[in-house]
Amino acid sequence: MWKFLVIVLGVGWLLGQLIRYFLRSKLAKFARHVSEVAKEEQRAQRHATASKDEIIVDYMPKQHKEKREHNIKGGEYVDYEEVKE
Image (cartoon, rainbow, N blue to C red):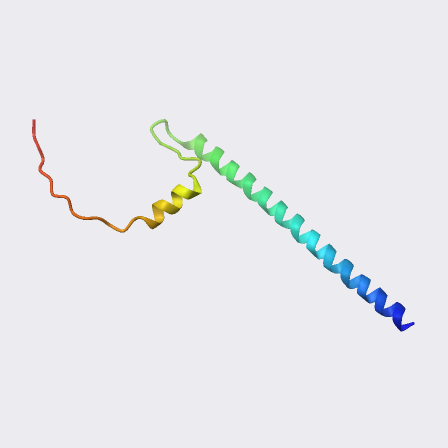
């Protein structure tokens, strides 16, 4: 009787863990899909409301973003003369 109870509880716990894992993965996949759809809608809306003179960047590579954020340290002053022609 005890063996049966322990086996049933163990199988129940194992099934619960498996169901929880699959539900999390499906929910995460659904959240990514919803996020992508929302981004596409925002992009389409931005294109619809943009004027012809406006520049819209749809995609910037991740590597370029990281370089751009980390390499801005300021710079040295460059003295120049304005030349009138």
